[in-house]
Structures are given as C-alpha cells and as structure tokens.
Image (cartoon, rainbow, N blue to C red; front, side, top):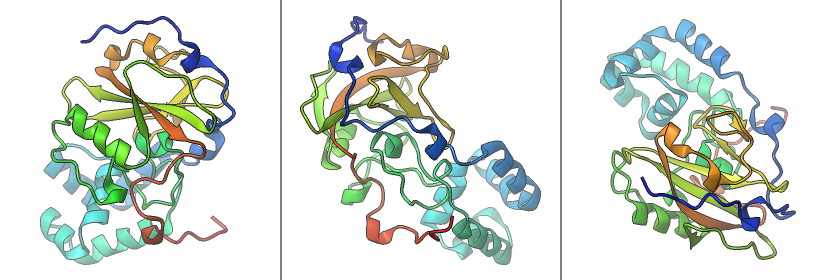
Length: 251
C-alpha cells in the first residue's frame, strides 16, 4: 500500500462555489431494504436464481442483466419462465429513483440520470469505450477512460481548482476488481456513494471527510489512485442522453 502525505491541503478543503452541493435528500430517494424485501417476496424465483448462478444478489446485478440481455436470454440463463422475466422488466421500467440507478461514478460526475433501475455507470461507456477487464482494473486504463469522459487528471496530489472546476478522486480496491469515486462538495468537504446505497459524507469511521488523503481507506481495502478536475455542473456519463429512459415528470 502506498504511503500518502496526510497533511490537509487547501486544495482539498477550501469552499468551492463551483462544486456540487451535498444533497442527500435528493440522491437518497429510496429505501434499499424495502426495495430488496419487495423483490425477494414478489420475485423470489428470479432473486433465488440470480443468487444461485452468481453467488449474490444486488440492484446492480439485476439491473445489468435487464440492461444487457433480452427476456428470452435471461429466461434461458436463469431457467425462469419468460413471462416472469417480462413481468419484472415491466415493473423495473415503471420504477425510477436516483439511489438505485446511480453509482459512485455517476455521483462524482453529478449526473442524476435518468438511468435504468440498477444501472452502474462505467468510465468511458458514454464515449463507446469499453474497459478491457472487469475483474482486474488497470490504473492507467481507468484514468484514460475517465479523462475521455471529460475529467482532467491532475495526479496523486491535488492542484488548486481554477474557476469553473471541482475535484473528484479515483480509488481502487486492493484486489483491483472494484473501483470507487469520491467528490468535492461546495462546502469544501467530500462525499461519495457506495454503489446503489445512500450518498454520505463520512468515511469508514463515520467521520466527515475533510481531506480524502487523511482517510484510512485501507480499512475498506481501498487505495487512492488519482485526482481529477471536473467542470462546473459535472459531466454526463454512462449512457448518452438520447438513449436514457423517459421518466414521467410526476415521479
């Protein structure tokens, strides 16, 4: 694990009017336990089949299945009647909330979607670029893909924001099979979103994140990799706007 200078930098803790505000009341618009409980009761056959074939169940896994494959392929893969798969697809398509359709990358980019239920935005995807392997992320490749999406890499140490910019950070799990992003908020503190779970501004020790370099990320198996400058307002990631779901304005 690399040792990082934990001296608090002005570039990391200064108030920044060009950074997004910390708005958990907007991003945390669902009860994940309630959603999962409902799925496990009403669609227990599909949930059980996913757990059996993949060893786990999550909104991301379910969402990716429905985003990538048609009903027949899912039916054949999970040995579930196609009509049941179609019933769940219809329900997913009618359901929309930010918490269960955005991940750490969409949050860092300040992109609220709309995305499909259970969607996980990947670096480079909106530019039709594909990560070469999802079970062992390469640092340089991820940095290039994030840059292609519109972020400017600035290194492992922060650089003062220029007008119209805020900062995000890329971390990798020690196994290299998982990435994570954090972002600077306009109050000078930092926040992040763990997959489809609620947005928060605290670390593993439940302390507010003032300086991300002072956080002991290794407790979560994470290593800090790179800072990026982001343009004011953020960037669009994951899916081009024209291909995103049409959401009822009353939702």
